[in-house]
Amino acid sequence: MIKKLAGTLVAAGVLLTFGAPAAQAAPPEPFTITEALNFEAGVFTFTATSPLCPSGTFEDEVHAFGGINSPNLKANFQIRTVYICDTGDTFFAQKHVFAEEESSTSTGPITLKGGTGAFTRLSGHGVNNGAVNPDSGIGAATISGVLKLS
Image 1 (spheres, rainbow, N blue to C red):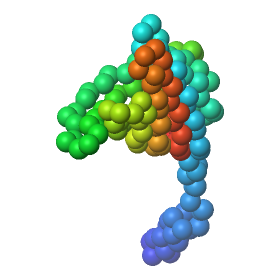
Image 2: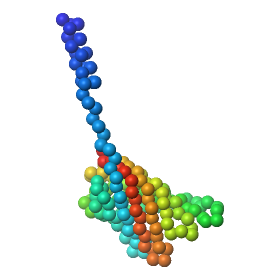
Image 3: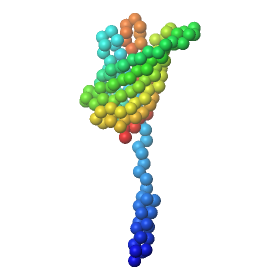
Image 4: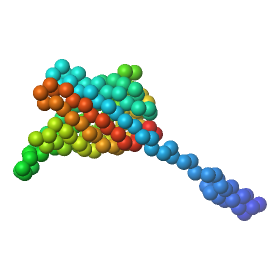
């Protein structure tokens, strides 16, 4: 009787372990963030595609690193960004931007990680391409990539 009960329990465990299909993780979703920067007025806004929030403001914490001696001085910036949605939710990004002295453009990778509300489990990556007019202090950036919310 004990052997028969033990055999039934083992068989049931095997069915539970191997018989049920595994849950599939959701595939990454594409996103685009468009930033508007006004350094003169200190106003930084963004719009974004779903599954991110449609719009809000953002705050950058910028760390500059030394240039490379070459015909054009190159600068590297590490930027930690907090995006604040109009709904109050936030999400976080880290950017690594490369710029040249003779150019008003910059490019580099971005990672998204965490936030509040709907973005607590956010993760993703992409590319940040931007430009700033040094005379007016007005700039724009387009960030595109893929992300997951769970």
